[in-house]
Image (cartoon, rainbow, N blue to C red; front, side, top):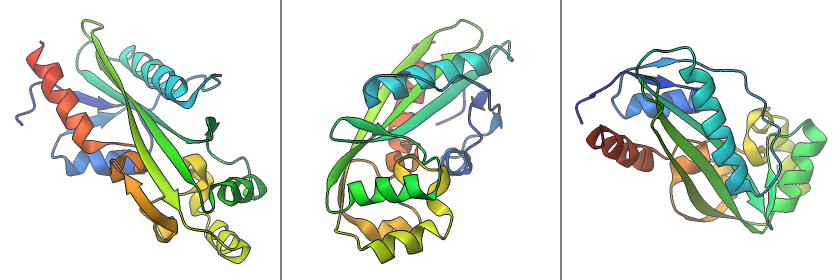
Length: 191
């Protein structure tokens, strides 16, 4: 798709930057500080935070389309964000062991010039095999889970934990590329 507008990625995430870059777009990065304290169901939290991030980034631009997203893991309806420390990461991975869970990513496109927005929440179901305590601690000691929702990165060492996946692999990484592409096309057509 020809790029009809300037894109601004409202994220400091290297994974989101990599995935948007792979899509062939040129973009700027603006990682705004926003209050990430939101209560509620994971779907509502990621939607609220994606919108909050997009609007905060848009305040720095006169034009262009802001892409913002937020991802949470949900187990039994309880949202799991990034772990506070290694013990928190262990508790999350122990809870996910041998279980199915959902990963929700809220994506917001925001036109800085007009304020027009498009917001969606994308869901992927993931099932982990049973994990031993040794596997969990070995993974935690790599440092990989400490900045990731649910304390795991599917694209890294935790990929070996996955027994099944229904939906977008990239959504679990925090940026559902096929859905973002579809949204960008629809956003461009609605201009």
